[in-house]
Amino acid sequence: MGFQITVEPGRHVFEAGADEPILDAALRHGLMVPYGCRDGVCGACRSKVLSGQVDHGKIPPVGLGPAEREAGYALLCCARAQSNVVIEAREIRSSAEIPVKTLPARVEKMTLAAPDVMLLELKLPASERLQFLAGQYIDILLKDGRRRAFSLANAPHDDARLQLHIRRIPGGHFTEHVFTAMRERDLLRINGPHGGFFLREESARPILLIAGGTGFAPVKAIVEHALAEESQRPMTIYWGGRRREDLYLNTLSEGWMRTHAHIRYTPVLSESAQDDEWTGRTGLVHLAAMQDIPDLSAHQVYVCGAPAMVAAARRDFVGQCGLPEHEFFADAFEYAGDAKAPRVLSNRTD
Image 1 (cartoon, rainbow, N blue to C red):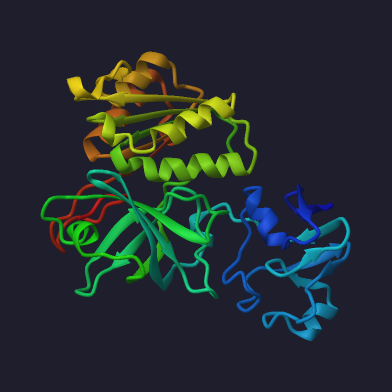
Image 2 (image 1 turned 90 degrees about the vertical axis):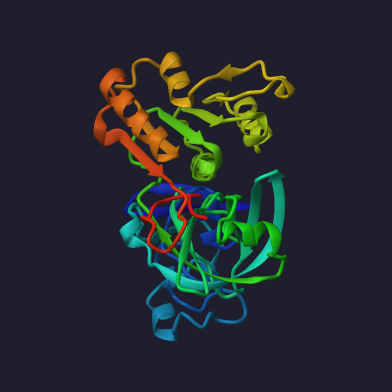
């Protein structure tokens, strides 16, 4: 049995199960409201119940005092609907509204997705959560003071673990450690979220997403977030790699297209070899998109990959395809060889 939850003043409506915290239901539907620990301690998700009944369980949450409960406030991470409910809650639309945190994280799982790509899952302490927007990144804080930045590959509603896609850079200070010495249950320190590369949900424009290599990580987060909020905006995805093995989650992307009529996906290889047995598109990934969608004047575009790819996409999409420049959003990454390397975004440092 479920109940209807209405969020004011935005008038967003979703359903929450009787045994489901209202915050969990909101995030599951892609609605971003403030939260922190998701355990009733920090009080960040405090919201006013305008009508209806909620229940916090037998033990009142630490983050909500008696006077606040008497005044009609609830902690969404603990409160469960007992009827249809109207709540007053602020919705997050900007990265500036989310606090940056420094947290410990344990390496929960390591999966070799390609010979040079590791999928890393990090688990935060039980009393902590990292709130972020789909497409943002975190810094790994190294013991020598250096930072290594990686995009979050999971959508915000799926925050029990943080997912990173890490490409091995020969001789790279951090990535060599990931592939040769890191073990599950190792501890790391992270800082985030960071970055302005995230889905602009207020727009109704069709979305074009271009990923190069492990630039697929934030694209994955954006797609999964849009699906969670049941957005019907058309999404066209192009993922480029050199060889077939660079498209390390190709089956996942194909599944999106099979399951959702508003999603199109095209993989593109730039240096396919005979043993790839590749019969798909070849060449530069942004040129493949231009061939299929020569007029981008009505689109919104998200590009994540190497700086040269991002620069070429911006130049050609704006200059030749009519894309309004303010509708182009990019996350360009480089591989930093030392502490003096320029700060950049995404799966981008060594």
